[in-house]
Length: 103
Image 1 (spheres, one colour):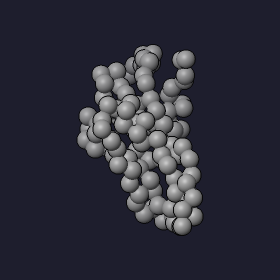
Image 2: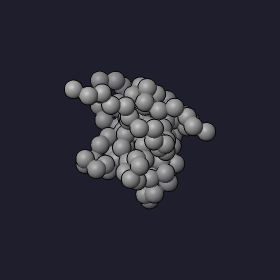
Image 3: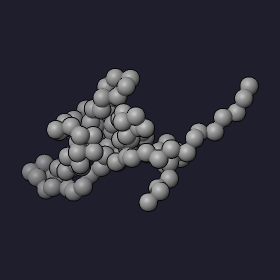
Image 4: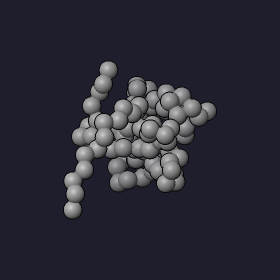
């Protein structure tokens, strides 16, 4: 058995997050940064979906086309542009353990 260290590679990433709460007749709606993510990924738009997950708010996510197929990025996840221009979602705890800011 051999041990390996991950090579230092600089990546670009953006976090899927709420940018403001909007009052509405049902309480509050959330505005997400999906247009910023679409620009980051160079796609015209991303649909923000909500699916039941046992909470009244549901689970908010966007779908990302990756090399392994379509994956879902939940609210709070980071979307990473890999070294070959590919995109994939990453959970915030894993992202924070793996990457640090360079700028």
